[in-house]
Image (cartoon, rainbow, N blue to C red):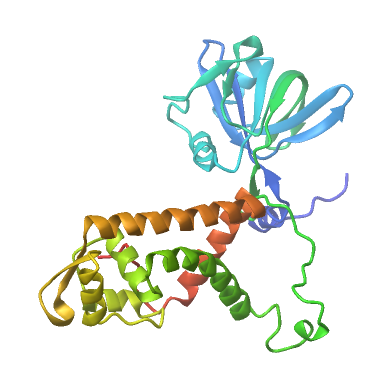
Length: 325
């Protein structure tokens, strides 16, 4: 027998974490009919003919006796929106199925809703896998959807999006390479995308006779009224726009704003006309967003928003948000 090499288990776990996997929930029923389920990312396909899959469960798992006693079980490949469900079934000592809609599959096994795919299986063989038991099952029924899957990488959940082909915005070689200000410069990409998006919003502003500063005032007050001019300028500080008492009075004269008090401490609130005008423009902006998401793809848009939030968080000097008090 060869000498066994000592391996650092934590380091080994980190190494395995470099392999991106899907996330599944495996369900069955215990001998007394109680539904049982666990989260697992050890799932894999084995064969197409006959259709067979495998997964593994720790020998120490309290759910192991149920899977050993019942020859039927189901694999649920989770969608990107089921992170909370994955966390729920990863815990022990609670009723994981409480208030969940559950259908019954072959052998009365519980089936969960809204997954990417559900595979109903019958145990073909079990193998000793060290500190785990490996279950190999024949798939006797399945269903699936086009929902993007939930994935797991390096100890964290991740989103699965299609890797796009390298994209060039210009045919001019000067836009690429080592140019200090080229098409890969983050500042240019952020500014260009912002102005192209906002140019479409501005078309709706022009129809109502609003300039950019006036629009910002109305949108901030639509989130929370009763702000002073000083308050709004604190929120405006990153935009380069500045609110003056004259701007507020101009909006009041047009029936869009109600101003109480004098100077920069004056309280500003939307009138009914001001709120209706603002909501109309915001609805137009949301429609523009929907059109962009349709082109990008839902999960690509989710990934983009998360990245932008991370960028804002990492570069934020402590500026307030419109939703802050």
